Length: 277
Image 1: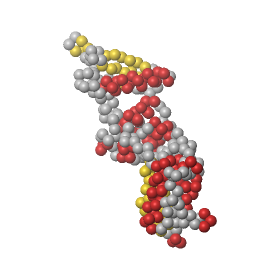
Image 2: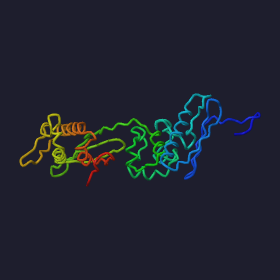
Image 3: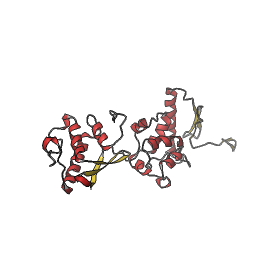
Image 4: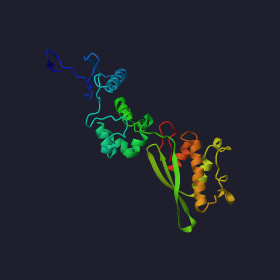
């Protein structure tokens, strides 16, 4: 600090300097207005974890009231770690902007490649550790930064509806199925036979009294096992009700999720059996 009045000027705000591949130094102000320097090399996993703990301590200290080490550690322009994307999101118009603001522009291609390209949806659903695993982001400091910046209002349940039906020539009918799960959104067009096929592919333990079958939803099967396509809005509503109940019972667990996810064109998840083409 600068010499002032015969003493040293105390920096009340913690600071973190992280030169790539070199040392990181952290200075945290104490209640006695003195600096406690802490230098970590982060050359191995143990040191890296100590580094993370030290940075988290500095973040906690920065949240104290003014006069007790207050001030935001990482809230300067272009470096803000928001407690939620909902704060300041009006200044962020894309995932690119958000990652640049976090100082992580090198992750932009990774996010876009894996379908994390809607900043409004990301603000709502947030990120979880399995999302970062899916994107193969393993660097501890980057993971911590992303998870802190996007806690979101995470809802792991699958939301599905059939908002429209398309009648084609030859009596063919396609059902528009819209699915949202975590940060993914899919739209697929299925024939009635696809719903029947999905029903037969589901594991036997989901075919008990609780599980809805197409026949019990008034959608039966015709001669030779060929599915009878329900007609009109009643058929559309019955299929939607059957699909929603099926999704509710299976959730995102195996067995059953792989078949469901493939039919709805949802991506595979790190903790589940990968969907095969």
